Amino acid sequence: MAATHRITAGAVIAAVCIAPLASCGTGTDGTTEGKRDQEKAEPAPAPKNVVRLIGDGSTAYTGAQPRLLRPERLKPGEKPPQFVVFSWDGAGEDGQKLFSRFRKVAKENDATMTYFLSGVYLLPERKRDLYHPPQHSPGRSDIGFNDRRGIADTVKQLRLAWLEGNEIGTHFNGHFCGSGGGVGEWSVAEWKDEIAQAKRFVKTWKTNAGMKNAAPLPFDYDKELIGARTPCLEGRKNFLKAARDLGFRYDTSGVNNQVWPKKKRGLWDLSMQLVPFPGHSFEQLAMDYNFMVNQSGTTTQGDPAKHELWGDQMRDGLLKGFKRAYKGNRAPLIIGNHFESWNGGTYMRAVEEVIEAVCTKSGVRCVSFRQLVDWLDAQDPKTLAKLRTLDVGEAPEQGWKSFLAAAPAPAPKGVPGAPAAKR
Image (cartoon, rainbow, N blue to C red; front, side, top):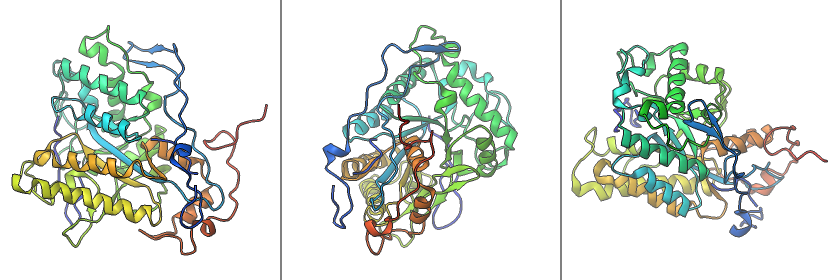
């Protein structure tokens, strides 16, 4: 399932490629942050016996997603939570079993994540001609297709991941990069067609794989799918237009500094970020692939003697990025990864160590993109605008209590964070 990647120029190479949301104890500057047992209230279980099959039964409505807590609007003078988003491009389960491994890591560290599924991972090789990629012949894919066993294993992980509170996004289908029909050349209409096909492969996997008696995915993908990351981080301009028309809520296909996000063309711009790169004078995109190409080039299995060093560089770079946000402007940290064993799996080890180091800290929320945008949408726009005045690593000079002291306007009715209607 390895994706093909393309490197762009520049010192920083752009990749080709939860927990409760409210904060509440006392920080060193007098703001509230709370004890962990108070912060981590147990979410309500999912409703039982609520199953309504959709279409051929590949997906189903099963009620509200478990383990998602209602986001709350920041109170005056309250320090924002430190959000960290771990996301995975082209998520699928193969012989490496990295999907199941990181589901386990997430559960053990009170985290939820976003898994960007490649639609062709639910399409068997023998049915490849069902895929009609824009600007390519039917049945073409730069990352191949799957087999019956791979589809069953991937669906199992998607099902369990969603039930554990994780988000299932999309990495589209054929992963075409560069010139000659790459995603950077696609029109708005072609993006819409690609998205429609990605949805269709998820909604018909049982029929296509000949597994009609298998259990469905426990969500309506038309409602579940609210965001994406484009292959190679290319084609974003026209993708954003298509995504806005289709009701998406966020995009994470860009490159940004560690500052508070804003909306771009109607979608939350949750771009991956530049973090320190130990041993180098420039910063690095917070993604495993980018660390790799700046260490071993396009060779995915470089000098084994350097594997440990390379993994440590990624781990320490991400931790430095986390620390300057956690102690500074509290901007969400956005991290991207792939289920790959590049350079001996050193980047998988690095990510796992980062998850273990940060996700259980007081005031930290390791969440999916869905949970993050729910929280952002619940906030007073004036509060978010104030947060965006803080530069990378910049903490409020007079402390959070003073910085966010003004009473925010009440949340509009019907949005996350709004007070419940009186009965």
